[in-house]
Length: 243
Image 1 (tube, rainbow, N blue to C red):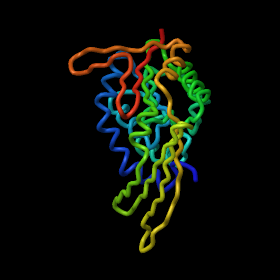
Image 2 (cartoon, rainbow, N blue to C red; image 1 turned 90 degrees about the horizontal axis):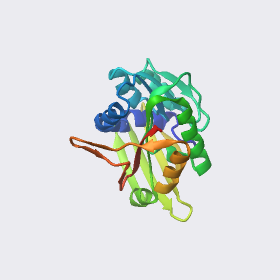
Image 3 (cartoon, helix red, strand yellow; image 1 turned 30 degrees about the vertical axis):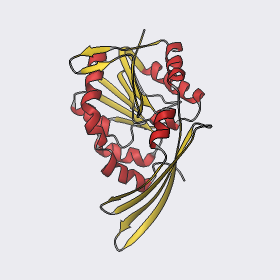
Image 4 (spheres, helix red, strand yellow; image 1 turned 135 degrees about the vertical axis):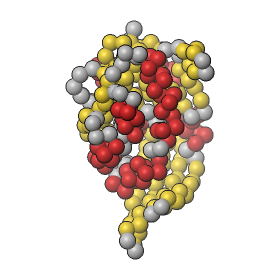
């Protein structure tokens, strides 16, 4: 059961990607404060391209990578001017250097080994332009424990999802099983997916970044308060530049 197949990608684009609109103002502000001269934005694990669409509207040249061909099909519609590649975040390569590199919505947690996360961060460093910023978030043990033990039923026009989440603290692995039904004419088509994530502790990610030569940005401007990295029950948000 692969993640982000044809049917779930369509539901995600329609029903879940609007979350990007809500967090975009803070994301853009952090990007502009950290890389004020930035003009190029690369989104890792870009999904259906919601963030790339907004970055293009803000005047950035955009590019994105994702492993799901079905997600990328929607990204091509949502961000038609973006350079898009089907690539693994641990081994990606796109032309040039980028002023803003993002990897949002706990995408790095889908890489279930510390070595793999380190490879993705090293690739991001290789693609970061001088004066650029790397901005990403990760789920922690606390956020997985708080939000992944659940069963939800989500009804949308033409679709129904049953979402069942579990978390194994000892293995630090979260699993979400999705059983979906999509209406096609008078019939309903079923699909199944499994999403697997690993939790990462604050110190582990910080250590990786420091070894790669990153430093953590601090802001105290107006209503934006950001000290080194932001922790919340939902996880960790990192804003980093190279030393």
